[in-house]
Structures are given as structure tokens and as C-alpha cells.
Image (cartoon, rainbow, N blue to C red):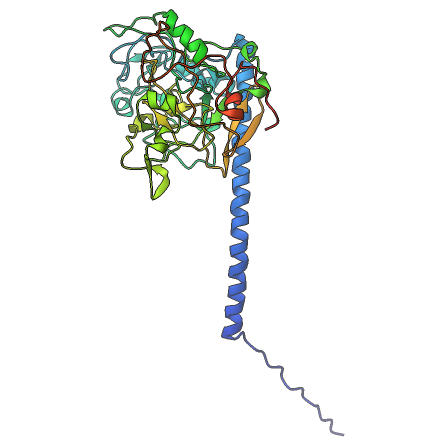
Length: 419
């Protein structure tokens, strides 16, 4: 008997239509668009945490330094003296131009670098030795072409915030962590030095010392050692260091100083804003009418140099405000300016407190009146002010800059509420 097999019809396979394919692609695009900001935010959160951890290492290094030497590293420390060739290749002194980060290197697992600095270092170009503690970090980049001092050109990873995109030349060795000098723009007060043709030690000047004692109220004082016992307001209430951006060559207000004389800034820290120095079309950048700093001394460009422009902060204007003042140097104690902390993080910047803790300070922190005159003590102390356009104000008074200013002073007996 013949069997008939009934065959099933073949199932038909349908391909995606063009419309279906476009819908799928659109959905994938939407999902990727939603996901990317979250990925970027997660990456920035990780970078911000890494930046905070670097700062905690600096806090630990400060405490270990103090434990070893019973004092904090000196801002504008070094081998002293001045020489007309301070900015050039090789002299026997570094002009008391060293930042606190130099002395902290052996406590930051940079013992090899410290050995190079603290011992004679052979110039790889000329073969001649640099003296211990090196030449002045004011040494310009171009002079390193003929006489290179490698330690000042070394970039230390722990001194860098991973959120900062700056890298390489024209910086000497970038840093994103700066010394806090308090709530006064007069950051270079200290013993005066007559300039002659040979290296000589710093000359004591009683008037300058008295002026510095009244004006320089921060954790660090130029050319003086401070100790934790000096922090009468408490270590947890005093800022020792602040985060800064490194300059990218774009004249950003946080990394390039708008250069003016000190007097108007001491009388009104927002002078550069009021004078219209910002670019009206790009308010985060200085405009064409603002005089900018030469490239060697831009913000964060030279980790070893104790200069308020490059590696110091003060608690006058809130984080990410504009820098304004005179070029300043370790030579002339009458120069300084407003140098707020800054960062590439959104909305604020990190600071390091004396107890080693790290806090993120927002741009909106209570900072008093940013146009109020700074605490200033007459340099001459004889009624004849060094600059007649700056009226002396009483030392010992509370900071004019609110909670922010109070956090920058070490011994003004101000009560610090939660921040």
C-alpha cells in the first residue's frame, strides 16, 4: 500500500525592514546618549577621589615632617642669599625661593629625588656640579637648555590631580597643590635684602618682621618656620594647602594673573573684576586689556618655586575666582595678590586642613565682602606708609572674608561652624 507523505510548507524567514533597522539604531543611540554622561561622571568621580587621596598623602607627609623636625617646612626656604644671576644658570645659592613641596619629597616616597636635590647634582650638559639644594627655581626654562637642573624639571605624580589636563612644556614641573598663606594678599612680607653684586645672607629688618607678623596670618609665613603649636584656632579649623589648576596657555582667570599694582588689590580684592579685565564674551578668561604673566611663572608650572602666582593660595576670594595682583617675587616683600584655589572639578576645589583631613570647598562658601580692604600692617611702622594708597588696617581683627577667610588664619580666635 502506497503511503503518501504530506509535506509541510517551508516556513518563510523575514528580514528586518529598513524602518525596523532604523528604529533599533535610534534606540541604541538614545541608550548610548544616556549612558555616556553617566560614564563620564563616574570617571570624574574616580579622578576626584584620586585627587583627594593625593592630598591626604600630602597631609600625612606634613605630619611626618613635623614629627621629624618639630616644625613645618618653610615657604621661601632654601640656602638664602641673592645674586644678580638668580634667574640664570648656576650660582651658589637658591635665593630662599623653595616651596614647601621640596622639603616634603622624602616624606612622599621621593627619596631618590631628594638625594639629587640635597647633594651636589652634576649638570648633564656642562658636566659641572650644581650646589646642594640646587639653583633658584626662578631659573627660566630657556636657561635649562644650556645648564639643566633635572630635579626642578621633574614632575611628581603625587603632586598632580588626574582631573587636570595640563602636561609637559612649557611648564617646568607641574603641580596642582599649593601652599596656603592666609587671608592677606601681602604674601611676600619678610626680611628685606639689599641687592648688590655678590651672594649675601638675608638681612634682618625689624619693621618688616613686625609687619609680617601682623599681616601674614596663614599656616605658612614666607621665610619663617611655623609649628602646629602656632595653630591656636585648631588644626581642624586651619587650611594648610589648597588645590590649583595648572595653566593651559589660554589666559584662564584661575591660572593667569591679571597684573596690576598691589595697592588697588589690597584695598579691593575684586579690583580686576571691577576694572573690566575679563573678556566680556568669555568671562572665565582675561581680556585683551589685562596684562598677563610671562609663561615661566604661570599657575602650577613650577612645583619647586615659592611664588604666590605659581604655587600658593590665599583665602580672600572663593575657589575658582580670578587671580589679580602684582607679579611678586621673593626679592621684593611689597608684592603679592589674590590667588584663590581652583580645580577642574565641578563647583569647587579641595583644601587640606592642618589635621590632615581633606575637604571639598564649594565656590559658594560664605566669604564675606570680597571688596573689603585686606588686613595690612604698615611696612615702615613709622606713620609713613610704604605705599600711601594702601591704608593700614588693624592686625588681630577677624578676617574680612567670612568663614572662608577664617579658615585661612591660624590664630584669630574665630569660631568655625560646620562647613
